[in-house]
Image 1: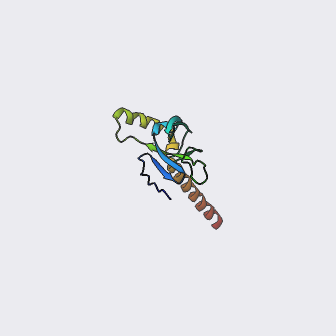
Image 2: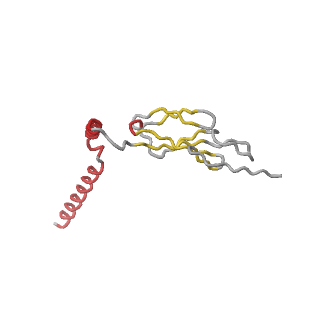
Image 3: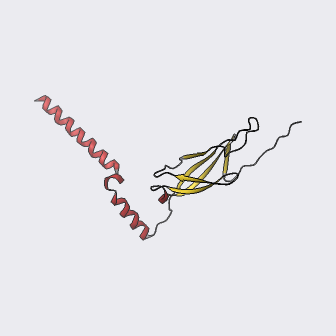
Amino acid sequence: MFLEAIVGQDEHFLRDGAHIYIEVPVFFTSIPLGSKIMVPSLKKELELQIPPNAHDRAQFVFKNEGIRDIHTGRYGNLVAVLKILYPQKLTDKQKNLLTQLHESFGFESEPYKNAFETCVNKVKQWIKDLVKKGD
């Protein structure tokens, strides 16, 4: 006799075999310095130390916190996937603070400008070198 159970989808967890995934929302201000958050699992809350400058969709694995495999008896993993949240609206004060922070980084906050200038300078040097060879 075989018994087949059909399990519905959970609103928080996504199952892939014995592994389960959960999307963990984190506000963008927590990312540059890193932060510590609690992540729900099937049995308890787990502590996750998010390293500074973690990327959106970064994955953190909690070993043996997934589903027990009925064939092997081993537990799968719980994978916490970061979802960085950004504000939808800013007050004038928040805009001002973010502008000040942005400007405090100088060229680091606009790396494309530095790359463009470097590229233009290389082309100028290349042209100068060609002119010198022609003389």
